Length: 98
Picture 1 (tube, rainbow, N blue to C red):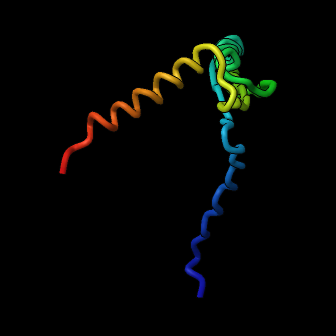
Picture 2 (cartoon, helix red, strand yellow):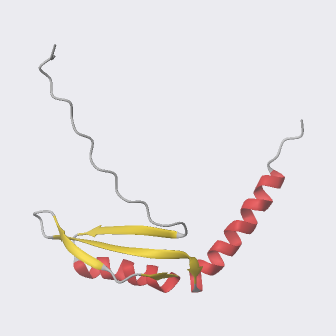
């Protein structure tokens, strides 16, 4: 017997990028702001060409790009090196002796 209620259809899952890559979506009120954020990301990581779309009725911008985290440069490289080192140090100093 049917209960009369419709079961919601789950939204299709978005494809997961390959290991070492990250899909980035930037949503802003202005296209210039989205471009500036994408420029910073491209300065730090290799990336695909950005794709932009309208974002809602208010005239915002949605920008998509994929970054390759296996090839960091500039600020991202130095940040990744220092964060990995500090994570190792933290795990050793924060351990509690049994």
